[in-house]
Every structure is written in structure tokens, then in C-alpha cells.
Length: 138
Length: 138
DNA sequence: ACTTGCTTTAGACAATGTCTATTGTAGGAT
DNA sequence: ATCCTACAATAGACATTGTCTAAAGCAAGT
Ligand SMILES: [Mn+2]
Ligand SMILES: [Mn+2]
Ligand SMILES: [Zn+2]
Ligand SMILES: [Zn+2]
Image 1 (cartoon, rainbow over the protein chains, first blue to last red):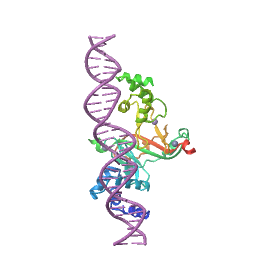
Image 2: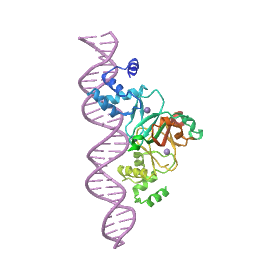
Image 3: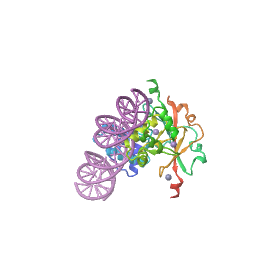
Image 4: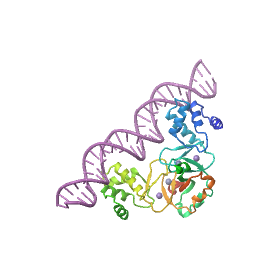
């Protein structure tokens, strides 16, 4: 994720140990951690990092478009580093596991004019729900 | 909404003034109130109703399948009496206005097997976002 | 090395929701 | 009509998630 850090530095981001560990924690595929999960993992690498800094940094990464906020349940928001490839989510109703998915088709086109109520629509968010293989086995 | 009350009584629901006003508040189309909004409107009809009772009653109505919980933002959950007609939502990104919508097509079929990760999928939730005519005018 | 403005921090505060112990009451029994 | 009792309502403590503030720390340019 050092290309992310380079990009951020180029955008005037002051580089600190705290910001580096938050960026490191958010690396990977199908990563959708809550702020407190990010904090717990960041503390493992940098014990003195505070909760406020994790929230601040996540908020900045979201503003910069480098991380997405995802709400698949009504609990804590989740932070998704897969911000550069549009996608939707598949969520296990039992354990909460989240996978990135890419349905075919154009859901925008599926909403008739008569159902648009004069809105200018810019975005559709799809959440598939079901039971993951792990939970089905148990 | 007295058919709802009849149905509930038939299911063994003890009828109280509090439950009646909550059910009354939840009557209508495109109604998506938060628990505290329900409480405020219930208080107007029955000043002594408590916040806990509103939460309890909403939770029961959800369990009974008579009201849906909807989360279109990461703020408070919203309670939707339109529980018997499957639908999705169109949300104004500016003022939060919510409309019930019925897109055509079958979004379940739009998720290829290779993207299902072994899940047994039971449901899809779609949220269209845009700007409502009111907010566009201003 | 110095300076300065950005960053971090602890903890107070806020919003939303849950739980508990007590009091009240709906509706059936008499 | 009155009584009983299990179910419901209530106040307020508590929990979770997130925001804000004021003080202290520090990155990076000079
Ligand atoms: Mn994702
Ligand atoms: Mn609805
Ligand atoms: Zn699962
Ligand atoms: Zn609007």
C-alpha cells in the first residue's frame, strides 16, 4: 500500500506513524473493518495510537476517496479500501462476513421513470444477503 | 390501520393505548420514521408514552413482520409500515427524503455463480441515491 | 536547530439503542 | 362488578458508536 502513501504525500498529507499503520491495516481484498477493529489492529503495531486518531484518519481517507464507508448492518460503519473498483456487497446474515461482488446488468436502468419521483439519480447500492458456506455447515 | 390492530389482537397481542398510538403513527405511504420521530408523534397523542415503550413496540411489530426496519443512512433505523409489498428505496442525498420504489428485473439473477462464494442467497436490497426535486430547486 | 501549523491525544459529550427493576393494567376468571 | 395475574409500561442506568475540544506533540520547511 506504499503507492497509496505516496499518492497521499503528493496531496500534501503529512506523514505520521499513526497514519502509516492505519493505511497498513486497511490493505487487502474483501477488507471491511469497523473503526474499532482498525483501532485494535493498529494498536498491535503502534500501542499508543488513540481512538480519535483512527477516526480522524479514516474520515480523511474517505474524504480523499481512498476508502469507502460501507453500512451492511445498522451497527458500526465499515471501511473498505477497495475504492477504485465499483462493486456491491454480499453479506452473511449469520456471521456478518462480507464479500465484494460485481453483479452484471445496469440497476439504474431498472427503475422506471414513473418510479423516479422527479429525483436525479446518481447511484445505486446493492446488498445481497444470505448464509455463507461456513455458517451453512455449522 | 384498524385491520392491523385486529390482526395483532388475533395473534394474542394485548391491546394498550400505547400500542394503538404507535400503530396509528405508522399509518400511511412512504412512511419511514425513526424511533424518536415515532416517539415524538406518539407523545402528541398520548403525552405519557415512554421512549422505551416505543422501542419495545417497534421491535415487536418488526418481529411480527408488520413493520420493516430500513437503514438508508448510518444514522437511526427507520420503521416502514409497507411490509406486505416488497420494495426498494430511493433516497435524497441532500435532505434524506425516502420513496418506495419497485425496480423491474431480477437482481438475484444478476449475480453470477462465480461471484456467490458458496453463499445461499435469500434476499437483495437496493438503495437508489440522488437529489429530490425539492432540493434540486433550492 | 528553529519554527509553525498540522496532528495526536484523553476524555467529555452526543446520538441511538438496550436492559432492569418497579409499577401499572388488560383481559380472563369468578 | 371485582379480582388476579401475567404481560406491558416506565424511568433511568448502561452500552455502543461516533464527534468535539483544548492541550501537547511533532513533521517538514527554513
Ligand atoms: Mn467492499
Ligand atoms: Mn419503504
Ligand atoms: Zn456466515
Ligand atoms: Zn431532498
